[in-house]
Length: 363
View (cartoon, one colour):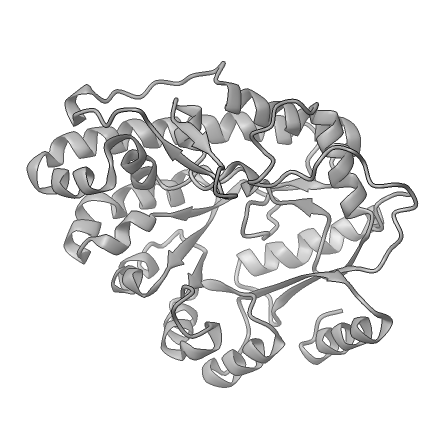
């Protein structure tokens, strides 16, 4: 059985998301993905790609894509939802693996490590076109193109932030001291990694563009132009002046070189950098993640108000009540993207989702 999404809906998806990126949409984007359909065939033997399974090279890319197709054939796409697959299954900061770090998923989540933390002067990063993990991702993208011919958006892998990747090779504690001891060497490596980041991103995009409807990443936000959710989790450990010296410029480069960007603001420790981020003229949106030990997204009215007043979009996923709270706090939901992805859904629950879409003005 085919994926339940008629090709004619892509025009509305592109129109709505383009308006959201351009801050011209007068209602929120709401993507609701429900498991309501019978796939009409047995579950494939290959595992579903995830951080638990992505390092197993014994399955062909075609077999992995077949299981993704099986899962997508269960889904119903309501509102602004569209068929996509989140490729963060290769772990956060997979650029480190492309450059020679070892991925490890023994905990069920993928992290990266090296055998030795070299001195900064000994670190020199080079493009590795035959890297096994880079080749694996490309093979999966090509298999997706053959299977769906662009009717499913394959998300960009989570390449990670440049400083986060550098911390893999240098060690986080070492890198923190390097900001004081060897600032020029740090800046040299940031420049090297930025150039490589763009090169790997561009080469992967070239494969996706062979038949793509558009682009996405682990934020699940569709774009008709190249886009990415940029980040620097490392920045929560440093002061705002150091953020300005070592990180902000590289992030600004990303916003200038990529047509559309969102910043992943991860945890209260990064809030001290929010004003600088909002002053980046070409940054389109900020994804605020309060963190597991913090109140959920409905408890940060000052953050959403500041983001909205700066003319940036934002993203929410903590439920319809959170959307209602943010609307009450900020006065509007313009510029908000909300997504819900659920498991098996009863007819009654589906009707509740449809009512919520209507409440928020989403067809």
